[in-house]
Length: 76
Image (tube, rainbow, N blue to C red; front, side):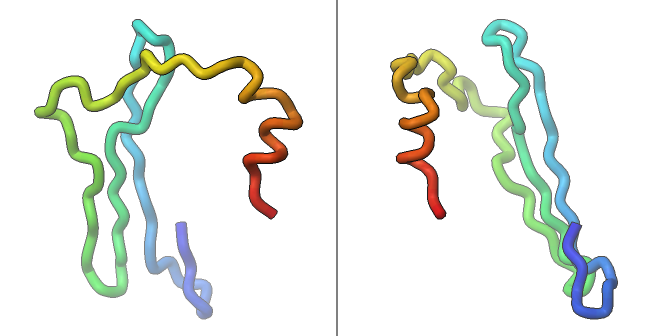
């Protein structure tokens, strides 16, 4: 939720999640962002009619997930 300077809700967002049981994980499949003041919305990542939109077969080396590696890849 996003509020303006008057503490009025002006924008909110939704994400739709699907379970990929074979991976296993949950993943956001699409997002909607509503601008209540402008009366507009954007629907992103609508891919329900496409096949193989996500590739979960990527293997990353475990060294990428050490505290030192994550610290180097982060931003300040």
